[in-house]
Amino acid sequence: MKNILCAFLILLVWNLSFSQNKIDSSITKVDVFKIYPNPVQDDLFILGTNKIKSIEFIDALGNRVEIYHFNKSIIKMDVSQIKNGIYLIQAIDEKNQLEIKRLIIK
Image (cartoon, rainbow, N blue to C red):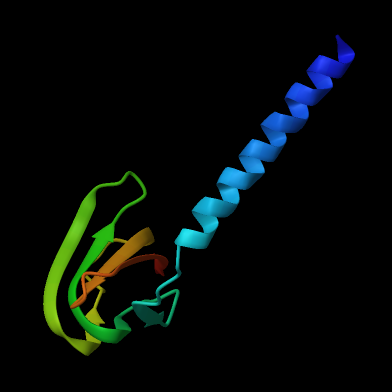
């Protein structure tokens, strides 16, 4: 009985690690944009690898706070009107590549 249980656990672990390798090899990390400074107080600078189509600010509860549309790769934004806190900033570029980063607004 111990041998059967041991063999089952080995097959289970092997299967999980094999399927994890398949998933990891198909995902490629794409740098869509860089932001600075972080934390930010007034002006936020966004540098896109390609032209940025949209920037979306999402609060800690998952609510969309602001969305902006652009067609450029260097963006200066005044974020002083956005409430202080931790946000996710989501950018979509002209190739429809998406990246999400964490942003702290003071």
